[in-house]
Image (cartoon, rainbow, N blue to C red; front, side, top):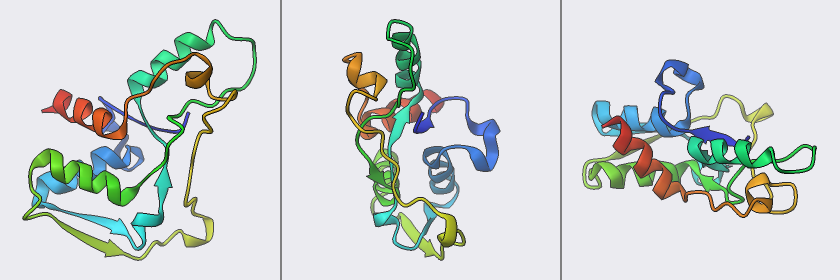
Length: 142
């Protein structure tokens, strides 16, 4: 599974997805903190319901190891911008950039290839876009 996000992850604290962490920061004071160069840090974000569909579809596939992701990666900055738009705080929102303390061991890009190793692709399942998933998720918690 790649970067999964969705309902009921608040209990995960610092391990919760970037989506809920940024959302909570923006709710608190219309600002968030991102690492320097967040426009160059990419993740393949996938909504939890798409992961559930991939698990069910895997039952009907040959045994093997499969990826479950959207096949598209998006930057941390894009996530913040989608949440800002969702909250309708474009004018007031502020992003503070901070040094990344994990530079020596940080992954700057994760991506599930959209090929024969991706369970959603071989099952012909279309995952939600990041915008669709974030909107669906935030609508569920509001």
